[in-house]
Image (cartoon, rainbow, N blue to C red; front, side):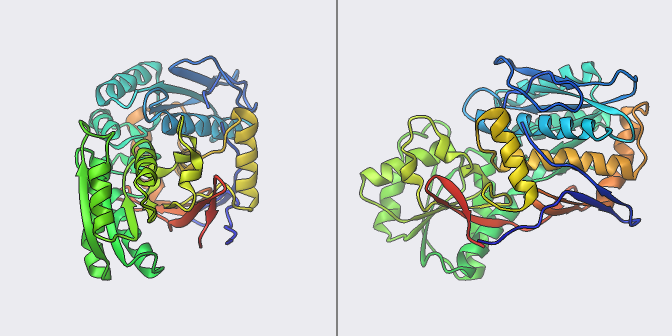
Length: 407
């Protein structure tokens, strides 16, 4: 297995080098500055941090901590908490401590906008969110109006970063589709490819469209491409049968883990056992309630984070996360953790202070984000003016319920 070098450090264009600590956090609870996160009662809002000296930066987060995508939002909420605690313990950002508050949007765009307004009233200066694409796009309309700096850890739709105040940590849908086709072709993982995707979901359809185009370029033979939609996402027998009849030896699943778990279960019942390959939406599949995790053995996915990596940063992060939340962090947690450290790096690069206006902070962050490089949990990351990250994807395979690097 390849060992990734991920000691957290930040190098700016002016050759300023800063070292930063690493760590993690489920349902985040109020925490004293510098303390590790601890579990809180199940609530939609979590707040922590603060400084008795007065000056504080306020970081808000938005994502689903209840409902079908709760695994993603909870992971993001937890990891932000850990990063905030670490940064506060190390002296904060430019000497100011961080206050942190997270709002549940229940995977609903309207509720995500409501969550943004709640955080805005609270005094938020930086937004980490939203976690999902549709919600992130909806919120970006508001952050654009306010010129609020927004950094989505995992909003992957191309339009998530259509405004100059919005950046992201994850790969775009287009890049995930392209990289998936390249990875499958370059590593000769399949000769006949089936695809099952959600035509009603911007994430899934966006990945599929780019995958289909790149598959042609790479000489992959797509023998079936079958869609489902939000009104029909429990019975996949037709899509599975068409892939089976077409002789697909690899099925590409650019979908979320809840539907993927059903597909794996139904394929097994139908006596169909191709290779399955997905993107970051599959992250979390082994933890689906009432799902036989053994059915996920051999499933492959592209992700910039593998919890079994042996570098110090990942080891410490995973340990901290497990200690606080009795769970293994996924890619969404890693993206969120790196997001907070990117905010710290850009803010320190630009000399941002807590008394600056939201708009002035955003203007400086737009420049600062393009002049830093963060070597974090998800690799070495730099950012384009477009808001897109530059980093390399990693292939992992599920073995004995754990992600194992294929690179």
